[in-house]
Length: 546
Image 1 (spheres, rainbow, N blue to C red):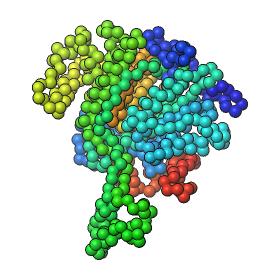
Image 2: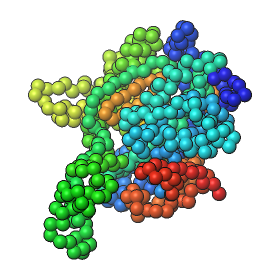
Image 3: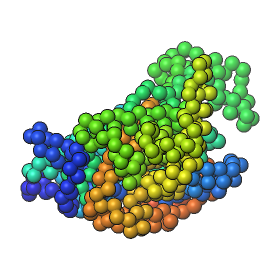
Image 4: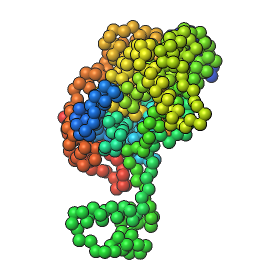
């Protein structure tokens, strides 16, 4: 965007980054190559957490299995005043303030979420509403008016989709039209109490600053994709009959000792214009069934793990094919991607997910090489599917083979050197749904900064996944300026300052029965207690300051 009195460009350091000669950039319509990517990252994590020991005692679960087996130490829990929109807005605010951005120069704000607050109105508009309140006094009430805003939903890969399209958009930047985009992710990963997914819960929001010549990570225009219509995890509109709803209410009334006359249910739901039930607003339209949405998903954990493995493997193969067409990849042993990627960043629904599922890609990328021959000498050849063997038996055999690979010295070393740093923050937060891959990226960068690792110019491999099911595999090349950016995050320091809650408070928050916040909000956005509209469901937010 050209600078002018009315539309100044964002005040953000813009240092050139040169892509390696074998890395495809984004090509403009004029044939010029331009580098785009992630310039900075910001995150907002709820100040509350439940220690995994507390959770294990609550559910009478094996703590060692949760901690040492799955890598879980704590789960982030939103307070009463927090929701998807507030967590996203807090992260964007942190990104804007840290980089001195002028909101009038931000041309795009795309949100990836599977925890949307409305079936039609984008949650991103609530985020923009809060940001406008925050910056209007300085930049004007219309400071976000020309910003393109939308939600993108595909389970946990929605934010990667938002990144993908925003990179393409930013690649069309010119010196006279500097395109600045922000990709937001925000989710509350919430499962039913007592369900097998409950221990993977977590929450948080984040924001990525996307622009050309980024200071953190250049992302070449080469993406491997795999999509299949799987039913491994979803949040359906559950339908219940009017009679079932009212029957549950009356059963509860009877349990409390209420004296209910026989036939009252028939009289309440029968098709009479003057019936009491038909006069109530929610049932006034004569419908016999109502739809109910719940934040908690319907899922098949084992099937979802298989979908994840298959999707990432197939996307990886697609990435190989696309990279080969650009000259990025050959079949020489030294060019194997699992060897070239110094760090591998994965979507982590729980901390050790990548450790458990990446052996499939490790195997596929190394098969037919001397390095794989050494592994196969230990674990043997892959099992062959027998005639008539059902899917369950075949998958069990493959799972056992992947576990055998994961225990070899070659894979243990590979995981320690290339994947492990990304799971450290996940262990302390839990699942962030759309943000999990970017949390792993932050965790890796900050851990390498602490270790004084030289990452300049090295390649990261990134693997996103969303149930339903889709995976995307892409690369990042680390900028020489990454230390300057990462040194201001203080991710692990902030996590160390959170407030622990007990099992009672946790279940109150989960059920939504707690009225007051555990930690009173201060210097943050909150949902207003008093709605300012007669329209049912209109949400209002405000800024709380000491």
